[in-house]
Length: 120
Image (cartoon, rainbow, N blue to C red; front, side, top):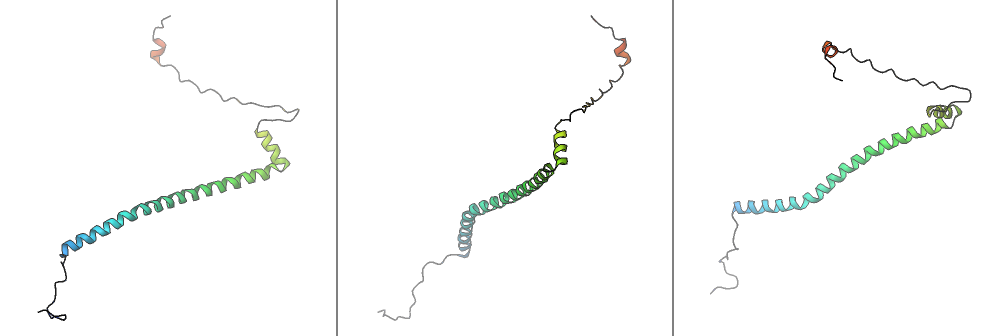
């Protein structure tokens, strides 16, 4: 009669084989990687977007500095006159000179073109 404190041990349950354990462990890691890949992809895209925005900001700051320099230049009489003349205005009594570029020379016609009969 088995007593309360018997020396006989009971089986602990089913033991899993080593290859099955590795397969189960791999499946758990695979599920964890799949679950984490979505947020990691979002984080990577946000870092790329942040880098692009930083480059845009640097370009905009450079443009702002250029425009502020132009604004300061326009605040002087000399700078204002330079900007007005750039737009094509002249003072009273001055003449505007317009330079027309020369047309490129056409190459001389070949001998065949000169000798070819012309039809009216």
